[in-house]
Length: 337
Ligand code: CP
Picture (tube, rainbow, N blue to C red):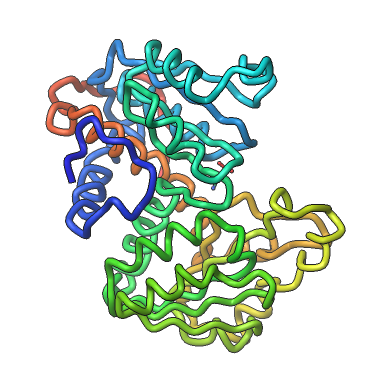
């Protein structure tokens, strides 16, 4: 694809060589993300960060990624802090904000809303999550993490065996990851969920058409026995009509150290897009896994900065110029990834 000037709305706009290009640029970003080098390649550029739903990782790592490239961030959070609360349309908001920004990262609770916004925007828009639909930058950082974790264990994405567990109906991260995996036809996927929260049928159909082996199950233990990656997800309570309805499913599939030791192969990597739900009635990924070296969740979150820096560098067409605007850092830097 042509990255320069493009919106990033869905993983379905990528071919395999696009993904490889993003990962190569993400690798190049490591000295900057680790604060060993500073670059000012985006000095003067402005990221408009518009998050109409709660976010810790996506919002802050998009902002950090832009700052690390030398750019500035202007941010709105929630509807109440914008004129949308006074009835302004997404169209008008996009027209106005794209006059103040060079690129926009946006999250919105309605499916398709970020695409609608992008149509009116005069600058590239990156989808930071639109309802249950997609979260493309998360899928990219997930696949980047899968690649780096299993490469160290002699594996490759082409031979990947992965179990995705939890609320697969509403989880936009697993929707995007499954669509992205369609570029890798030998992958084996086990989809583990309550029957009511299964992966949407059209996504499963597309995976099978692409050649992937897909199994569906509502039993955790047997499903995680022969996989390289267990990718756990939270019950997406914000997509249910009531907390009581979400409570029916919360805590249904819990991975803890004891279950991991009894059922997983020794080097199985544990991933989760986060946030994990650490309340007593949920705990889909127990805190007792925190010392397990195969728990990759925080490496995964760190990788979000690398992948988002790569997206900005490619979309704003400066990937080849980053090093020319660089110097060493002069302050104390704590060890980072
Ligand atoms: N993974 C993810 O989207 O996290 P946030 O909701 O904190 O952005």
